[in-house]
Length: 324
Image (cartoon, rainbow, N blue to C red; front, side):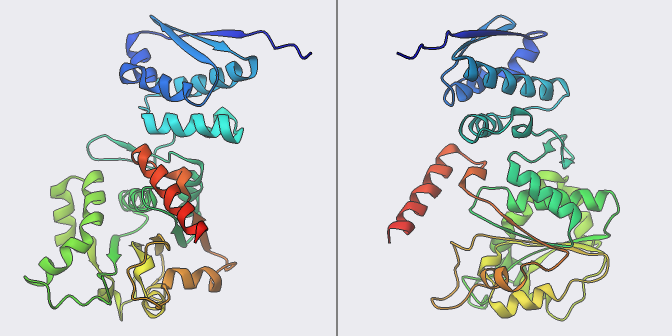
């Protein structure tokens, strides 16, 4: 008969109540998120954490809490979503705790909010943006594709690595037929471009965004407005690229000028193109593969950083697609 290994116990001492709150989260939500992934139990007593359970589990939880505590002590707030992801990577994927926790901020917004990768794929994505001139990010909604690209773009503008930001989307349901909509051109395209504005306003002061747009430093426009231009010294983001046709994608990619960087994002499972029409984003996956200076980053449901139900919903749709 195999002997059951004796339970182990590790005690982690926190500096004070503020540190405890930062690590544990509101009503100990971070601890509960970790306990969901492990057989070990975590008991908070004052400024001490007692971790009890199978030795291997206790070791993993102790290492994870230690990495999170180092993050807190360096002044980086941690969210429940980040804790859940890190715990899942350690428990299910066997990833070392030090690799499952990230700390480097891509950008600190004008309101003091740090923007940083929350998953391993997001970390690889940010690294790809720093090294490549053309990055194509493909994956489901909620994985941070556009948000992190925007953070990298604003950081590049602040550091004067580029002189302007150009943010664009194909204004469809589709083919960019906007004439039937009420209002002037700006009123017609605003609903399509609103998500880009939302991300931009999350990182920059609204008045600063407005001044930058008036000066031409920031441009937010439908994809059709890129035709015939050469975009030099710019950071360009094409969002919702699954809704481009092959011709539109070729047009966009050939706008790239000297000193520029382009990030293309999209979810190839959610195209709004007419039935039978090939998505430009899906098309370039095969023809651009292997070209130096071009990097593809693929996100999955594991990278979803929205409400935990979003991940479950994406998985449900993927299962349905596999059954058909």
